[in-house]
Image 1 (cartoon, rainbow, N blue to C red):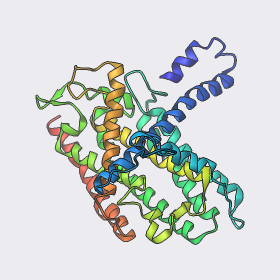
Image 2 (cartoon, rainbow, N blue to C red):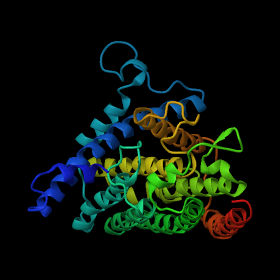
Image 3 (cartoon, rainbow, N blue to C red):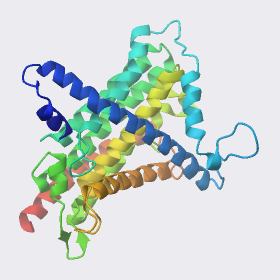
Length: 358
């Protein structure tokens, strides 16, 4: 939407299409990157506080005179970011230098370009594509390539083990995640993110908002499968096998330091927002108000979308301090023997429900 608007208002768009395209991409990319950076700082602070609360601690707090983390520890994420930026960038002597340098950026790009299709409100979306949800599922898979490159180029057995685990895990859990989205497409009849949200207007069952999660029993199961598969794709606990500290040091990222290491962290938090944003848009009404017709303006739409996404991110943080890590065989067994058969059954159930009840 923003892309179309900018192309329309630029007078020489027809004469210099290449230049206009590059200019529009840069104009849209900078705000998106700044949003990811600010959101990551907020999410890191939130995770510090949530994890501390669940362990009966207070977390980062500023006390006394001199340098400290500020009131309530608000400056702690900034201190952590500065620490990573200022750290020495070490590249192992035996590493494949070019691929080692390239890997963190490929991982980040996959999450970064996924943000283009997320609808923050009725009018605030970088590109309203008619295949928006398919686009997000496709480009978010780029991260697997970066992780494999990071593990292989490090020339370290722990890195390679972590990369192989991560690739197997992400590729496997993309299947139930994609199958869960098929049910949403069957109900709404569109792949457009805005179209899916627009389908969720009004009430269902007389009292509930017409969100897809409430429309029939099978759609709740679709949401559950998609969200848990998304947690696994983000390598979050209890699915953090690829970087299991007790087994693999830091997995595929063992040999990384400084800003390159920070890019992997930034990518993880960006992926968390993309997964939560897609879940919010596809199942929880996106930018629509919980009370249909009340506070449904574009300004409030941004608040509803970000609020729903942040709630789901909080759930991911909650999982981290609630569930123990799975073994590798358990992780793959849950996917191939549990989630995928259930996802196929769920598609069949949604089809029967839509055919008989509508």
